Image (tube, rainbow, N blue to C red):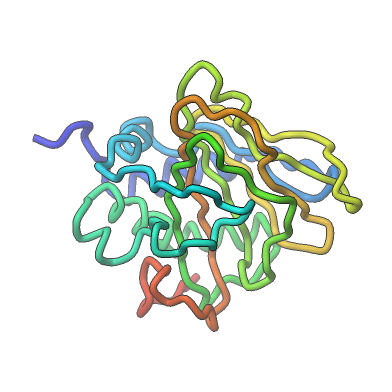
Length: 224
């Protein structure tokens, strides 16, 4: 018996679609969307209990690509090992979800590729203010944080001069979406992490994405 019970990809896609349709748009300091109840609760819980240990990184340097060999992507190999990863990847790959992303964010996603990273930050992790590269057609951060202090583990938001202007909510099973642009500065200011800050970054990326080993379906482009 699998615990918790993992829903089918069709059910996950329908649940996520309702969340995306109900997303709240905010244009300050740049256009972004806030989502709640993103995944079926059982699937969110299943991600949390994946037997994947948080990586040990002595000094991240304020970036994620300092040691790519320690990052966890929902690759075909990981999906073959864990049904949780396979179901979530299949749901995000479905044409009806691709259409919703395209309509919501006003972007062309046809021919792009799904990229999903499972992130487990521990104490000492931080991210310098940065903007995502345009090869990421959109960025969605899905928060799977738990614990009494997890509410303070959201993404920090900055204005064009990199001045702190706010912080997204890190409520469990919530998410934020934005499209990379000249003003989309964000990061994670240094602060204590008691426990593990779990989240996922989900993107559709340009067909020419160089790191093919990060893709969920390297041979299956997104179709709408």
